[in-house]
Image (tube, rainbow, N blue to C red):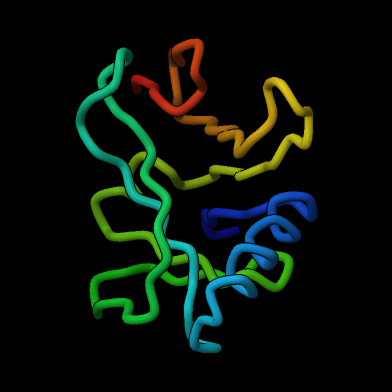
Length: 111
């Protein structure tokens, strides 16, 4: 089975709400990228993108189009993006099997 990136139903619902508010093109997707930085060495960056390049990997999960660049995919293969609705600690949560350590904020990790 090929490695993918997925979103849970809760994350898909939140992403769909954000996309609907933004009146985006039907080809728009959620770009998941990894950048150097953060307290654990690497951090996630989420953005909206409607033009994947030929080097991107594109996935569909729970009705959401996900776009991941080739380098970021090395760090995110198998990632599951979730959304917690808790009013104090809620937000997007990254469940990454490649992460060896994460920081308290949950958006920084090391491999």
